[in-house]
Structures are given as C-alpha cells and as structure tokens.
Length: 323
Length: 276
Image 1 (cartoon, rainbow over the protein chains, first blue to last red):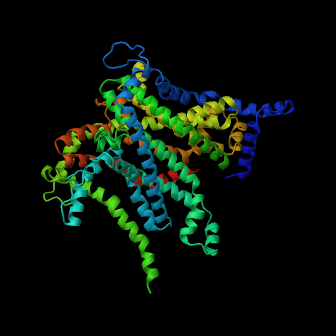
Image 2 (cartoon, rainbow over the protein chains, first blue to last red):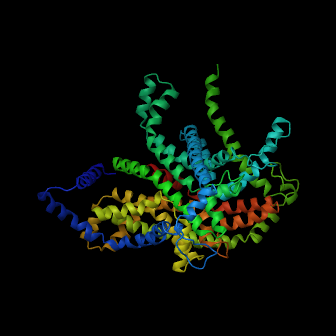
Image 3 (tube, one colour):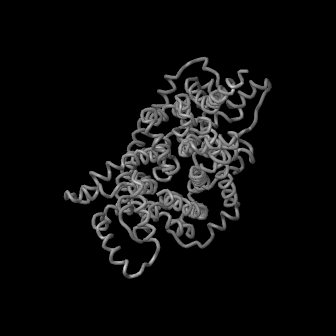
C-alpha cells in the first residue's frame, strides 16, 4: 500500500477534527473540499441510508414506543398502557432471569470461544499442510447452522444420549448424567457449545494476529534466554491485543443475541434457567403479548448500548491508529 | 535419548486427538444416525447401524421435510439480500470514504451502528405490517439487508480510504461521470472486501432462524433452517433422530461445498476483515 498517502490522509483528518480553525485557513480548505463533494454525490448513499433507516433504525425507534402500549393479539386497537408491561416482567421475575442468564451466557461464550480459538491458533500456528488441513476441520462447525448444532448436542447430551453411552463404556458402569437437566450447570454447558460452534472463527482471527507479530521480536526474546511460556505471556500475548479485543467484543455482543442453540437444546429450561432474552421474546410473542415482548427487547437494546458504547470508542480509536 | 522426537510428535498427536473428539464424534454421530432405522436411532449412539438404510432416510427427509422448497426459499431470500447489501453498501461506503464534513461523519456513524446494536425484532414485525410486507420474501430481504448493511459499509469504507485517490482523478480527466467511476473503478477494486462481506452475510443469513421466525413465520415461504425447526419439533416428539440428522446432513452440504471450493478466499477474507 502507499504509506505516504495514508499519512497525508490522516493528517488531513486530524487537521479537520482539530475543530474551528482561524479565518485564514478556511478558504483554502474549502477549495480543496469542493471537488470531492461534486464528484461524490449524496444520492449514491441514499438507497443504503433509506433501507437502513426504514428497516433497522425505525424499528429501534418504535421499540421506545410500543413497550408503553397494550399492543397484543387480544386488542383490536393499541392504546397507552404506561409502565404495566415493565411491571409485569419485573413482578413475574422473567426480567431478572433473562438478565442473569444472558449476561452469564455472554461471559461464558467470551471465555470459551476465545480460549478454544486461541489454543487452536497456537497449536496450528506453523504453515504446514497438516496444520492447514486441521484448521479447515476445526472451522467446520462455523459452517453449520446453529440450530443444527443444537440438535446434534441434544442427541449427544441427552440422558440416554451418546456422551453417557461413551462414558458408560469407558468406566464400565452405567452413567446417566442429566447434562441438559441441571439448573446451574446446563447454562455453562450451552456456552461451551456456543464456543465450540464459533471457535474456528476466533482461531482464524488469532492466527492472523500471531502472523502480524514480527519474527525478530520473538527471536530477540529467545536470544535473551526466555522460555516459550515466558515469550508467549510477556511478548506475544500483549501483541495479540487487537485480535483479543475484536474476538471478545464480537463474542460478547453476538452471544447476547443468542437463540438457536438454546432453543434446540433446552428451549429455555430446565425451570427457566437458560431463558435468555431472545427465548423469552420468542415465547411471549408466540403467546400474542407483543408489547411485553417489545419491553424485553427494549431492555436488551439498552444493555447492549451500555456495553457497546465503550467498545465503539475503543474500536474507532484503534481504527485511527491503524490508518 | 529420543525425548526431542517425542516432543516433536506431541503437538500433532494433540491436534489429532482434539479433532477426533471435538469434531469427529459429533460428525460421526450425525452420519451413522442418519443411516439407521428409527428403532436403532431412538437412543442416539456411536455404534454402526445393524441395518443400513441411508437411502430411505435421506429420501424421506427430502420429501417430507420439503427440502427442495426450503432450499429454493433460502436462495430466493439470501441471494437478493447479499446483492443488495453489497451494491447499496458500496455506494454509501464510497461517499462516506471520500466526502468530508460533519454531516458525512454523522451519517457514517449512524450507518455502522448496526454493527453492535441488536435489531428490534418485535417492532420490525409492526414496521413490516404497516408497509404491507409482513410474512413475505421481500420483507425478509429488506430486514436482512438492513441488518447487514452496517457490516458491509464499515469494511468497505475502511477499504476505500486506503485506495489511492489518483485512480479516480485519472478517470475524471478522461471525462468519466460519477456513475462510471463507481461502476468501473470502485466496484472492481472492492473485490476482496466484497468476498469478505458475501461470506459474512452468507454465514449468518443462510442459517438464521430467529429473524425468519418473526418475519416469515412457518408458511410456504419457510427457509431451510426454519423448515428444520418445524420438522425437528415434530420429529423429536416422535423420536425420529434418523430423519433429523438426515436433514441436518443434507442442509449443511451447500455451505460445506462452498467452503471446500473457496476455502482459501474465505479464510483470507475473514482474517483480513477482522484485523485489517
């Protein structure tokens, strides 16, 4: 690429973002800006902006309105209902359940998806034929639909399923662990499954991160007598920071929207212990309580916003450093 | 001592065992179960079928699961979504990358907000009803396009910013219009990001079932994953694991085939997109 051009571009950006400049600089700047404005007319961006506004932004705006109504399958008209929807999801405990399960799920996925992905990347780091083949093998789950993955694991983890059969054969005695029937551990198991499904993607991102570390840095560490373990934690892992940020944030935010794996394995059970936001919304919407589902959707939106704003700022700062 | 030799083999051996346990077992379970008669498949396990009947199972899954219709419905929804995301996204990204000013910065920030914000799935239904396209394929295409535009615009804007401006200026001097510059210069140069964006949208839209539920419902327009849910919900009740897994195997084939053919491009596309 052309570093000079990029630097020039960056200088332009930083000049502009420096805020109001004095009068003498203004005419020159405006003269430079006119040509891009004429040659890049707004109407190229309008179709995208229109579709995005109508089908993404507008629903999110409506989501601030409908939770305060009685919109449901049982009323012909929609009227204002105050905070009653929020009160009912608070009183029956479903809000607290959804909050706890979703956040636990997201944290679990962030841990397992990244743990698996990083371990695989380190194992398969060298560019050999053997490693390239197995990278593709571990990428396979990414290609499967999450719903299908859920059914596969239901068959594996059912009480009379394949995992208990294997364990029975290995131990020589009858094993019948209710993997999907525990109110405390099943949620953790689901995050392991979610991590398994997406570990191939995390692995690829970590491999790219590892590749971007200059060889002379690790060589210098080796010359100084650092062990492989020490080199990894003191030198290579800190340099993987961009890959870690990307993987952790996409895992956190992506898994807050989880539905398929949970629906295909536990449908929110046992005893609502895996009822994440989307499972609740799906169920309540099916019962015709649209406004109540919308209230839950609004809270999910707000939680993601609270988590996402720091992430956006972080990513944007990094983007500018990279440019 | 041959300790170094043992150490040398430790890593490939670990990889092999990991692959066998974590990928091999689930894959094997799907394949053997899909070849069993119902009686053997009730308790899913890893043993080989005593009686092989893959043909019957796969034919039943295709016919009773209405897979061809589901496949066609998936194609009819996913392909237009991908094309729209790419074309509309590229147009917007070009403007966001080249124009300057507060308005552009604000429009760009708004357009990429969908990278992190969740789609408001409940009110999307209301939105589509008002527009008269609830439960239709155009409605589904519009929703997918809206959902993935942010990703496309983000990657494409970043990419166009790295393209030398001189390429456009040269064409301008030759008298090219904005339309010609976009169509003949920007779009062809975007090829690597287009590959990344296509893969991303395909990976998510092809297997989506959550949004399809709300927008399409279970009607005749159901996509493959939506179909799988309906088939499996009924089949689980009847303990038909052999049919579920025949369906799963068939349904996964298109994505696996795409991956095998375009493996190198997919892997480089994903990694370039993530780390830039």
